[in-house]
View 1 (cartoon, chains in turn purple, cyan):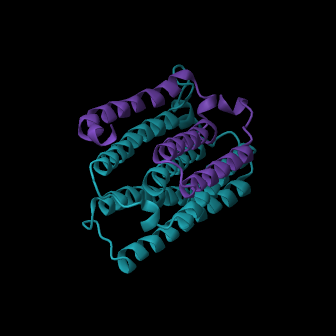
View 2 (cartoon, rainbow over the protein chains, first blue to last red):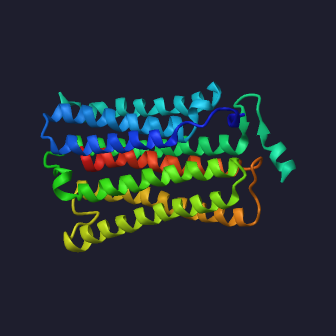
Length: 93
Length: 196
């Protein structure tokens, strides 16, 4: 099973997570335009979350069925965002 | 135990033990709960005209350090699993305790932060929507960390009973899944509640 897969280099993932966290904090204090800051922070957070799930939680060495079982329900969150859009859209656009 | 291990294995569909599949299913539903809270937070924030800038109310450097602590505790958790897969029970125990220590450090810093917000700044759940969403999200996550610390200590106790070997250790991996998930959620909460 998954023991057969080589262990990822955990320390490398750690340094990536640390670097991305430092960049995030730097972005907050860099006084960027609001939209640039929001997009940058969301992308950085998603990248970090992906690194944790993919390497630390070993999703990369799981079967497709398990990855689908985990990934597809999260699409429901998109549904929730869409449902909230009528309430918040006039503040964004 | 070995018989239970065999019964727990259903490699046909997911290629892994049922305990792991069960934990993943729990984590997905937990992720949707956190997702619901985060979406509510986003909607309330978008709908408010006078939302404060979080970095002017909250202590970003302290919380960034707390994020660092949780990331470190994720590393010690993968080291714990790695140790027992090589049959190293002492290593497993050492890294489990270090991970629990990381969790306790996180909770202590969060308690300090709460104390400051509640008793120095005088903020309460009812003070504003900002406070309501802040306390709801961070306390819900904090309870997950507390549960995780208890879960780690129970697993540590089981390791002293000889429950884990190089061949039989999937419960350590299941514990790891839970702990990394708590780390993952914190990454999102830290970004959306503190940094944005």
